[in-house]
Length: 307
Image: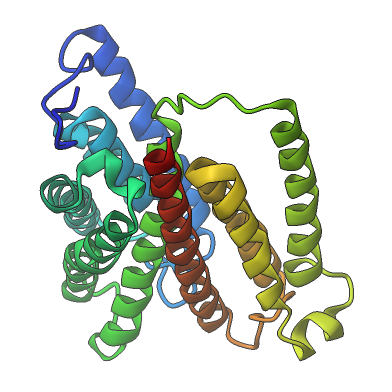
């Protein structure tokens, strides 16, 4: 449940077998997302520019409350100990990742109206600052330091590994968390048939743009020309016409296609250094996510005022 300020005050998942099932599901989702992200690790087996688990952790703490932290401690430990490092480094990384979610959610609850942060542009920007800029500092610092102390990362590479870790977590918070938080809430809006038709046209347009920009068979066309600007009008369409939910969904779908294409050497961000390519892509996607969600929130606030 939430109080009028949007802060968590407890909920139905506080005790009993249902809560245990929830923890198991969250831990499993964390491990699967972590394995997918670590498959794209280039500078270090434990540091990747694509890290969806951060978004899962922050969203779960906002939706269900802070009591779900054991799921992420276990999930992060399992994901890391089965990938690289020792028991000690895996535990330290798990602690850092868990703290990241707790700290991020706590700040968002205190300063950005919690789960309702995406109702106003100021809330979106506060979420970006707290969840994507500040919270990942804890995870990146604890994680990279533990790897360096344990001998699994060179101190000379500390800066590069830290930057990759931080940006991967930041992009996960900006892309995944809004999607989960917004779909956990009741919309209360019934669309007319024409709006559903418009949504279908939007999905086709989004798929076409994603294919042309990030998964085009014409590699020279995608890499020689800045076709990434084509993503902007599609997301603006979603923000103005389809609301925050569809905007967050579009950002997530676009991000998945973009990462897949860039990893395969396609699209405007692909280059000779895969990690650099993914970092630049994540910066681009993060800016798109914040901008489009802020526009969607402004339009939604205007519509509420008119009603």
